Image (cartoon, rainbow, N blue to C red; front, side):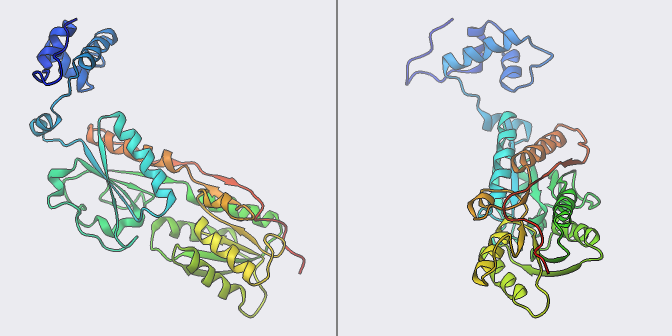
Length: 339
């Protein structure tokens, strides 16, 4: 093996790597471009990578991408960075992208779910594809109908314009929540729904209405903040008439607000009022009592979404994917209080 140049010497080239590993430059290109499988042996690939490390060789990705017309960069569009769920989605997406030599640009819609401008002066040239949450749908106008492949997360599979859809089984999640509360004897419900317009929340509302047909259900909407949820829930729980015995929330953040409202009204959770959430992020076990909630596999969600986008870029047609969810019963739910 040749000795690499000392610091400050000439920059090693792919020819140097090929000479050190005893292979052709074409083989070096295949290995370092991660296109060697089925064309080069594992032993040869290891030798090329070892030679590159020894020489301190780094491929000129900028020049390579200009030749290929690819930037190996994907855009992830989410409603906000303040929501822990989307932080985990990003982690999963970035991990999958990195394994394939891609980078991820994270773009939160400025007002959570409001309109947003194209974050790049020339997105078509700066990106290879877009992965987006349906909750940030207003931020996608710059990309719809364009040449960039678009993979949607948590969106209507029947909606046109996306190359692939990856969803969470939120319908099953809501069925699990309602079944759990019905089994505990609850028949008067408050649904604290997210005020954000989104397909995923529409699905939850439709399933809840069907599952609780024949019971008393009132729906109140609130923005996804603890303060707004506390105010909305407080007003609903203090309203005249029979009080709900269970509150079903579209999100753990809303459920935390309900718990605060209950305490202010002198209600005990779960003895006087059962509360459920949705997501199972850190907040679910930070509140007291800990929340019964639906666990959503956020990192896996991001990973599968990015893998679908990478598949589209490779020329595949990924099938729609629906990831399973699970109910996590905790101390915030209990038997319905005696009337």
